[in-house]
Amino acid sequence: MIRVLLYVFVAAVLALLCGWFASNPGEVEITFLDYQISTSLPVFLLVLILLFVLIKIVMLPFSFGDAVRAFMNRRESKEKHKIMLDYLTAVGEGNIQKYEALAGRVAKVFSHEPELKNLMLLNITSGIKKAEVLENLASEKGTKLLALKHQIDDAGKSGKTAALLELYQQVFAEYPKAKWVVNPYLNLLSLFQKWDEILKVAKEAFKRRAVDKKTYLMMASSAMLEKGLAKSGSDENASAELILEAAKMCPDNAAAGVQSALVLAQKGQRKKAMRVLAKLWKKSASTLVYDAMNEVLSDAKPYDKIKALTRAVAGGKYKAFNNIVLADAYAKAALWGPARELADKYLALYPSSAYGAKVMSEICEGDTLVHSDKDMRFKELASEKIDELKPFVCSACGARYNRWHSVCDKCKNFARITVFLGGE
Image 1 (cartoon, rainbow, N blue to C red):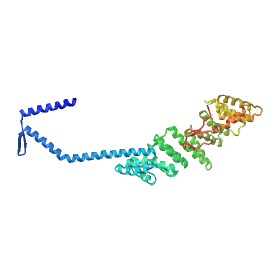
Image 2 (image 1 turned 90 degrees about the vertical axis):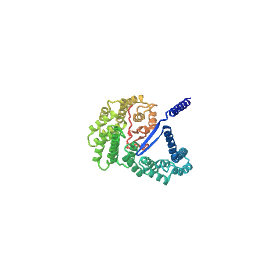
Image 3 (image 1 turned 60 degrees about the vertical axis):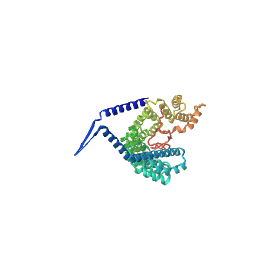
């Protein structure tokens, strides 16, 4: 309705204009150099209209060319859209025959868009052809990182660790924002025992904010500890310095703290070693720390050892766990009464504890004067949960180990193996 009214309004305006021109024809005079043209206004307007029509006729072939190009573009767009749908369907189905059929069409239709063409060909080619596609992607700045990622995947699947290390090194050097490369790069460096390089990479990753400060310190401390342990058979002084530096660098690294205490004990600084272990106990009470205390106090008399252990584990937040380790200390001194009493207190709170069952089973074996039907179940429980007695645990996957090492054998994460807290 509005359009009809608009057309009527325009027609009325034109009619009024025509009527006005008819009654007031007016004159138009054009002067150019020595030429002068005089005519009426209606004739002048008619000439303008004819000139406009003539220009349109002259431009018609060009407009037709534009129309043809627009038609071809629409047709090409439809073909690209269809190939894209076929490509996504083939990828979803994993249909190798469709892959092979599509490869030629993709290369032809997307020939003027090399980056998009290579991205599509990447998933539907294999072998030598895929290597060529990856080289093409790597030559373009916008797709180089994607090509490197695929090369990393291929190298990882084929077990080419040397090539994998070079690729990680390249990505880390060229792409500071690629945070995903840090952990696998460090894991691989640890496989090659490149501890100095790990220290550099971890420091650079912290500068780039790819890891937080706590993670960086744990990584650096773990690499330093590994380096120190590796030198323990050849250069004891250098080994000791590195281990002490690792413990100083990251107080949260309980494994480094325990090793530093053992180093101090070997140097004859037993009191200092016990202070280190006592401090560590209050932060992360564990069977590892307790075993280290026993090693430091190996030459002490049984009663003196119990006194020293009692002082070392006193206080702190792990009060119940203090009872079970002291029960073990009393048992080692053949003081079965207090040993059983302390073990009973702990097991009353944690009846399914693997370590509690282990200590109580040893008390039951040593204390031949006291027997009960309950005593046998502790030995069975400790045997059933023997894996839980391992003092190290991976914080990423939960795997347990008897000894510390920087990389988890199960999930391959670097600097994630920590001391398993024995406290509540």
